[in-house]
Length: 382
Image (cartoon, one colour):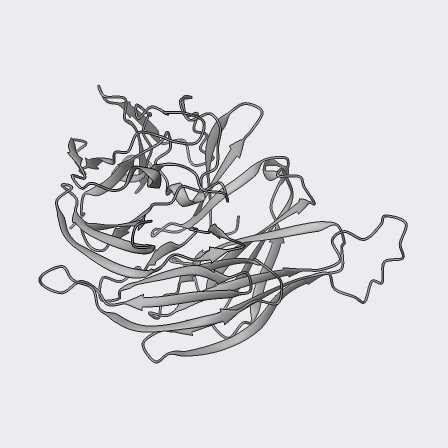
């Protein structure tokens, strides 16, 4: 049975706002797909743009399948930092029909404004099999909460998650949710507790009344202040956290570079939240090239084995991508494939990376010059 898919509509872009920093909030979306030729685009009356992809069975027969959904914006910006305080839902069914819904809950309006780190303070994820979780902050109680809602926008429960972090005297609300691919598992909340501590809390799947229970919590210590980290679900019910440490990125160009001294290292640790234990850290990448900042995006290889990360290399103080490396590794930390991706990812800003259930990956990137968001689908080999 094919379940209907949820489309979220907020700001101008249908992916999670936690990954979005952009100044053209009322611009059109331009989507590029590098895939097979069987593509069908439908635009609905209220501006939803839906991409239907079809998978060939043989030369004369195809099996329709919906793989990717985006939509046109009509949530308007209030100013450069804020959008309308509303969350509209569009539910796309396999037969192409679309239902509309709205999350009817008084989420504080400041959640729809970008914080000091450039991100919106609310987050939204799909909760398997057919619900959504919405993370927001309440400044009055200095707390994070999670709304559990149906795909029709009806809010079932409101659960306290964690206190808001205060770093250097400022609210640092960059916490986000990581849901698991199995409906038998719960979700994880992660956040900087301090500049050098990432805290995580693992909650159960909702009970019959829609309530979540805290199962375990822990901390992960960083070598560098506010070091880049990325949390992703693994197939076995655990979660991986990838930490990238970059050192000596500001050495003078005329200084001697010791090729035996690695300036960037990426480690993966697998968190077993039910048992509150970890495996790792495992070193999965290292480089001696200076003057680089490295970010990571990771996900499960649904149609393959192990896990996959993109390592994004940027020159210091330059958002445009210099190089992208795709790593594949097992739960033991053993790297079994590493390759550079093509020039199409140079001088762009990658904002998300998602494994697809039927194989391949979706890479979402932003072109700051053309003010566009582009989605590129790659096969398992990249």
